[in-house]
Image (tube, rainbow, N blue to C red; front, top):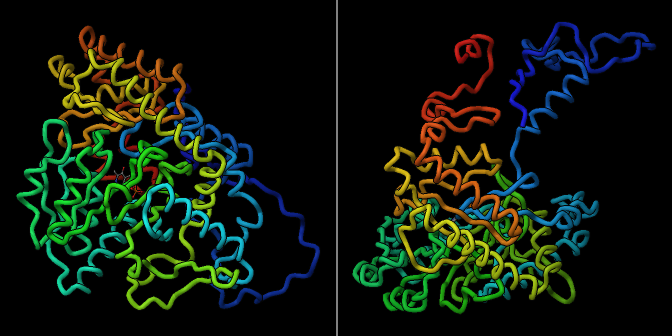
Length: 489
Ligand SMILES: *Cc1c(COP(=O)(O)O)cnc(C)c1O
């Protein structure tokens, strides 16, 4: 790994350096053509560099970036897996890539068929009655789901006031409920890390619009009482919203529809093959039970007399939630992924994802503390409890992993595990890669005892050392200037 300090492009700049040469003007100059158009003579402070300097600068920068094509990414909660390149290739098909969102229905029958087929497959995979592919992320899917529930309750005459959310939930769940106008009431987890039924029963009332539950939850534990949970909520007229971000653990094995949930969102960019990170692109389709179907966002796609139609005339719909057809190419990749694997392949995904996670859990359970001992599915949550006695925290462990060439796992989430280190290997990693990770973690556990200082100042081999994250967050420098550059150094 390079440890050279790559200068900023502004620092490479030198007056008069050019990346191009224009031929001499061989026509008469015509004055006034650009009159009334605000054109700048120059952009002040804009870097002046040659072609090769630009190419090398950005190539060197790109090589300091860790990515899924370079190595293992054991994040928890946010399935970050290698995605077969065939799906990218299919999404790059010229006809799909260049189709214009304003094309008339007649010209994009194939695109609409892709969307409709994806909907049908997602219905089949989840056991839900209908889908919208419009939302662009899991969080937007959650908001859409809550809006559907609110509309349906309003139609019954009372939108209700409260949404119940277990204490292990992802932060987007309470945010979505809150944005939709609900008060969030937290539900306790029991010793197994699952929803405490007594606490649920106590808090479930006719003021509760919905329970938002993640299954398997963020500890990787399957909510084995999910049918009882749904029954408790339904008995008081509430809805069950399932956060399906962890579908990687269930796919091909069990269907949320069979768990009596009313709404679910999926994260196509997690489970169904779109590389993500850095903010996108994503897609968070929402599946619903029959009762909520009339409220789905417009347009919906219908096949009428052999033709696909975008239908807007839906009086109960919550309206539009996104322009055009959603994140179309992400949906194309998901369809390619599902079809290229087929039912058996999909089945194998969840089996291998669960096997890989349990292999890591078993291999590290002596060195790293496990607050919850229950069997887990696709992810496991260790903590830094054993290492704390040497003054070492989860962040030190995470930073030291960088020195061993591994991306750090998610830390300090879920909040119910103090000092959490949350690992989700996914199905794409080989035993060899898992062993490399396990060896690095064991080595770090030894270092914590013998030489804790090396952990507290890690990373040592990375391009940048330990950053002052508090200052970076509180007073970020968003605009470059020679002055603040000097200040920082
Ligand atoms: C990732 C995730 C979300 C949010 O999804 P985005 O696509 O990032 O908006 C919600 N819940 C859980 C459990 C997640 O892992």
